[in-house]
Length: 295
Image (cartoon, rainbow, N blue to C red; front, side, top):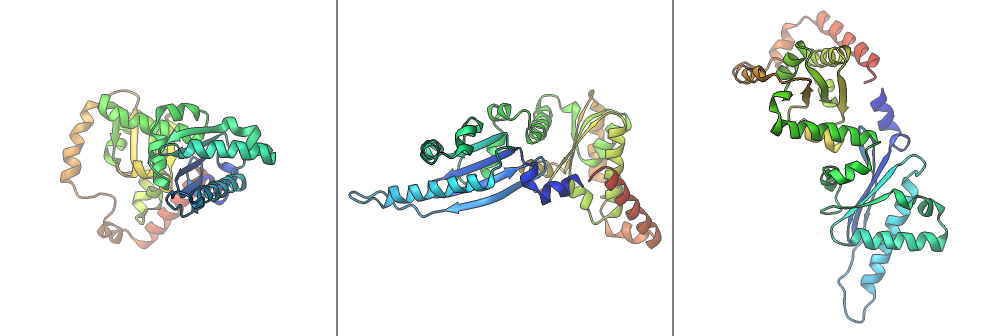
């Protein structure tokens, strides 16, 4: 239910706004803990500089004005704590200077009173996917440390680092994570919402039970949206991962078993073996559990 609320009302939930641009293209986005929503895409043709022609400067001014208006229209500064302004080169700097000058000239109090919320960052281009590199910058995340987005990105980055430096405390894949939780070793569970939408009822049941068990033993659960950049990154490592309270080196033995065994959670044959009555009852229970857990 919390995820549905965020999806339906991203303006009410967003603590972070992100503006990524290169000359002639810009995306204005709102970022919540579960979603990255594109609120505006601005595209303006910028002609090359020519001696004696003002077409280039006029086009740039038109582009900056469109970005200015999009931010003014879509960013609620009473709720947004940080506005990330990213670009390659000096595009962001030129726009930020334009924004400040125009805000003073027009007496736009929203910009004047909230200019400290703007954080200029390096981004490779003006496409939405450039946000991934922005969120991977530790210096940027430190400016966002009191936002939900930052907390989820931080725990995902922590897991990725731990995979390299302390692999016996970082595991991914359902078999490994479940085995670790059987020993009450899971400190933080990272899971994508896509797994709760599986067409296999038994799969959904497994993940709901896992989340309940981790919470019951004092672990923290982070549900990542597949619509969010961080959720897409987590999906690349099976969609479920865990940071453990203590090392469990013996779990590595499960890798060979998992490779040899058939998929225990997604075959059509298994679904056909379940009776229709049992399947309906399980589905009802899963829905009830997910409602109780605010999914």
